[in-house]
Image (cartoon, rainbow, N blue to C red; front, side, top):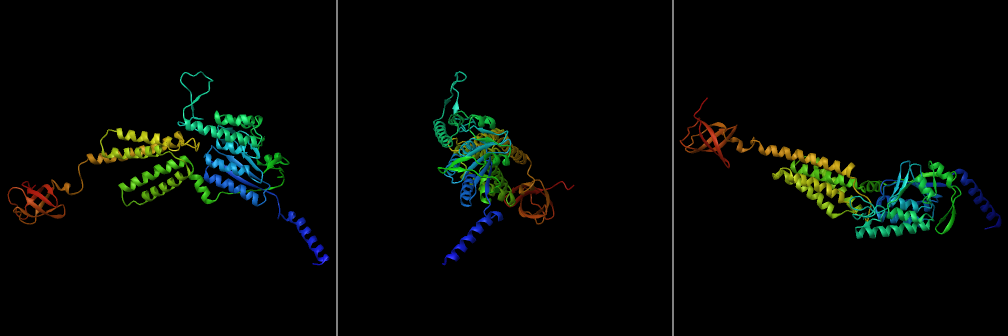
Length: 452
């Protein structure tokens, strides 16, 4: 290529680079990911993909707006691993007002390059949840003085607590945050407000809203992938990253409250279909609920003991229909449902998610109890009623002989012709008869003497 043409080409490239920003082709942008719910495989996949996309599309930063009650340990570990190895600044903003960064949310907030919170938010309570809903797997020894350290009563809880404490300590050291407090959040379920978190050096700043946050972090220097990175977000466009349809579905199912309701609804649907064959809708709805429950159980770590107790509870409710226990089986079934529901997702070593007893489990079990009570009452009353259908209903009815019964012949009763056996004297054709018994497909009859 001649020198003149080469210079002309270089000038053209330079002009294109100067014009491009003005046209928006290379405009700076921030990717936005939103977490409003538990930390689970679906939300983990969403955040990890958001980090990868931000690295690939040249985003100046990834902003995560978060409100979470906690989640699965494995999913939290995957998210933090992606954050610590990210090649783009990751900003975690606990928002909106009233939001939590509880449990798993504490780990994710501490792992951010920039950690911020909105007013009226809280962070902490990162200890594993013990059976019965307590934190940290501890129980106070009877007679212990107030202020003494509680004693752990479960080896698995101690193991989980030690692991999580070491995990969050390493994260806090990496991000130069308050190591003592984050360990305390795990071991003692410590929780603080946004102002206390700022004073304790758990977060970097408190921001009224997203715009104030971006203004505050402009020019801040952070370490990204071992190198210093100056955050430049002024005038950057915020692009919201949405969950895929499949991620949204799995995120919805990864809620223990949803899983329990679907499970009970599925069992009820199948029960109604079995007792009323041909309705179709309850059976199909029940099957769909159970399939979704199976998916949820693949996502959430569950306890087999809790599941068996729930199935036993349903079995006892059904048994009440067929055995007169005066409500003992029914009460036992309700107790099993409540106990099984509280234990179903009680896996503190793997997750801090549990079924809400008062707002979800108790109303759901009460609904099952009311439905079961109606069924038991209705069927019990039916058993006590005199039979009004079937061949047994023929006893006592009056008809006429359509042929001589000597002693066997035909009779006409309730609009039908029957073979009949006369009891006593022969009965002539046309004479009135009364049914005294049913032997298979043959009636036993006698002459009706009262013609009135």
